[in-house]
Amino acid sequence: MPENARVDTGFGRRQFLQTVLSSAVAGAAAQAAIELAAPERLSAQTNLSPDAAFQELLAGNQRFAANQLTSIEHDLTILKERTVGKQEPFAAVLACADSRVPVELVFDQTIGHIFVTRVAGNIVTPEIIASLEYGVAVLGVKALLVLGHGNCGAVKAAMKADAVPGQISSLYPHLRQAVDQSGGNFDKAIEANAKIQAELLRTSSTVIRDAVRDGKLKVEAGVYDLTTGKVTLS
Image (cartoon, rainbow, N blue to C red; front, side):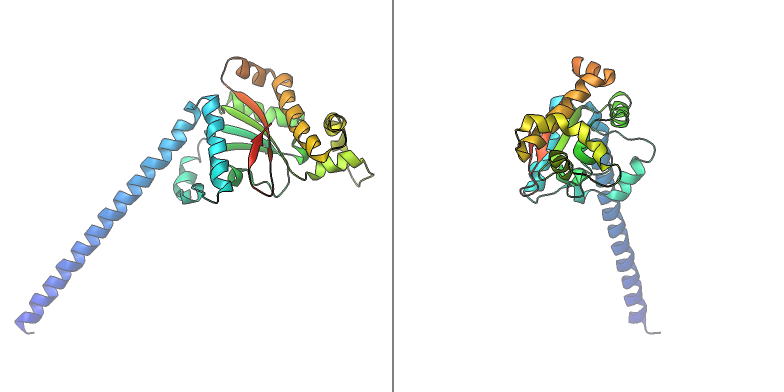
C-alpha cells in the first residue's frame, strides 16, 4: 500500500473519531439541558402560591388561544420517567366530559401539571369531591378551577328537560339551580352552573374549605369559549 494511502486513512480515522466525540459531547449537553429544565419546573409546581397557580393557568390559556403552545416542546420521555413514581400538579380542574375541551391543551400544560376530573356538565358529585380532595390534601394543588364551556350539551338538555334514554336525566337535578337562575338564557346558565359548582366545592368539602381558609388553595369558576379558545373567570 502506498505511504500516502496510510496517511490519508489515519487522518480519516482521526477526523471520524473527533466528529463522533464532538457529536456525543453536544448530545450529552443538550440532554443535560433538557433534564435540568424539566425537573426544575416539575419540582417547583407545588411551591406556587394559589394566585401564582391561577396566573400560570391563564398564561397557558393565552398561549393556547394565540397558537403559541410551549408544552409540546417538552421531552415527553423524560417527563414520563420523572412522573412514574409521583405526581406534583400545581392545579386541579373540574371540567365537562365534552371532547371539545382538552384541558391540558387549553392551558398549555403537559404530563403531571394538572389534576383533571371530568363529568358531563362539570357537576359536583361525591366521587368528584373525593377525587379533588385527594388533589388538595395529598398532591398539594394550589388552584382549583371549575371549567364550564360554551354550547354545553348537558346544560342545554337540562334546560329542555326532555325525555332522554338511559340515565342521562340524572344530570338534571345537579343543573337545575343554574337553569332557574338563567332566566332562559343558555350562556347565563352555563356561567351560573360553573359558579354554583365552585361554591359547592368550597362548602361541601371540609378538606377544600379548610385549605381555602388557610390560604393554601384558591377555588374559581370559569367558562371556555369554543370559538376563541379563551377561558374567562366568572
